[in-house]
Image 1: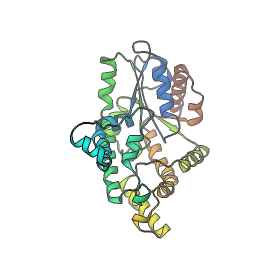
Image 2 (image 1 turned 60 degrees about the vertical axis):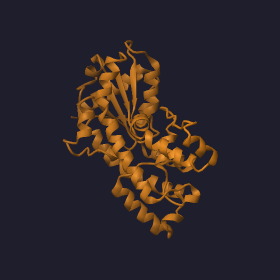
Image 3 (image 1 turned 135 degrees about the vertical axis):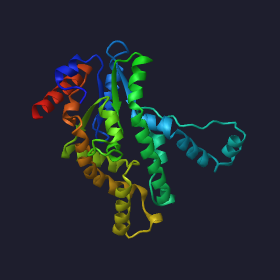
Image 4 (image 1 turned 90 degrees about the vertical axis):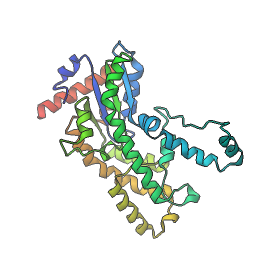
Length: 294
């Protein structure tokens, strides 16, 4: 780890932290709080959102082309697009990633908003490569934040699917090496209560997710047998609900493997953090706890 103790972190001129864990446990909350609390050259934090980088740099063209395909189905918009009279683009922000989620889509019945499973797999593969690229950009953005904008501190807000595209069991994994060599990795760990709440929240509003290819194939085959339906008869939202609970359990050991490269805090700890000082205290405590258990 780049910091060996709480005191080491407290004394560091440049604090660099990467947050990971399931979506909904506080990664973006902490990142927004740190970003909004201070300015560059005054203890401020540069906020690097992996999902934002994916959507604006690596999948922006895919997303815009998907919008254009839909627009081409409307005669008026088709005419305007063909004459370069309108411009279509996504408007992704740190807090609104809907264009990216919409592009990833959901497999199943087209009449209910689904896409063909083969197309879904293709988009999943695009997302995996984009996520890897966005994370490999982190060391360069650490330097950019400092050299261009004057930020000494750097907070990386990762995607919930980070654990799916790295092999944390391998000391030579290039993404894990690039991240751990430049930042302190911090797992925000949820309890069974949090898992139940995340599942309830997802059930109310299912959203596209990323799955490892082998896990997705197994899940899809299991669901088709369970429901006794063909691929084009599947309710897309019902499939996502079916997969989400299994995904929560599937990711836990992968997050735990990543946590061995850094430290762990709980979602309850995060809920108590209201200021940058609170954040520093939480990280110091986690570092000292890890040191004492080493």
